[in-house]
Image 1 (cartoon, rainbow, N blue to C red):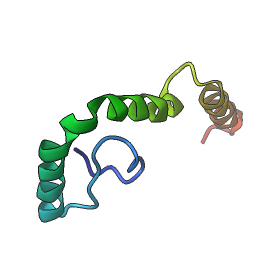
Image 2 (cartoon, rainbow, N blue to C red):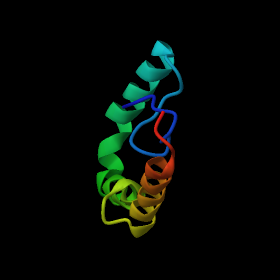
Image 3 (cartoon, one colour):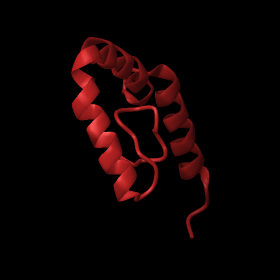
Length: 75
């Protein structure tokens, strides 16, 4: 359960700081998670790969950002 707007497709997301929405989402999880736990795990593992260190695109982008940062003049 989380409200991290940068990754709403991961885990069980609810928007903002809405306690009622969070509670409703928690009830959904309690009532329904077990019915498709294997599918949930497979979907989450596929989605989380974009954040893992073996994701070549991610590593390349971080390297580019670091190169840009190092190339900037010091203040």
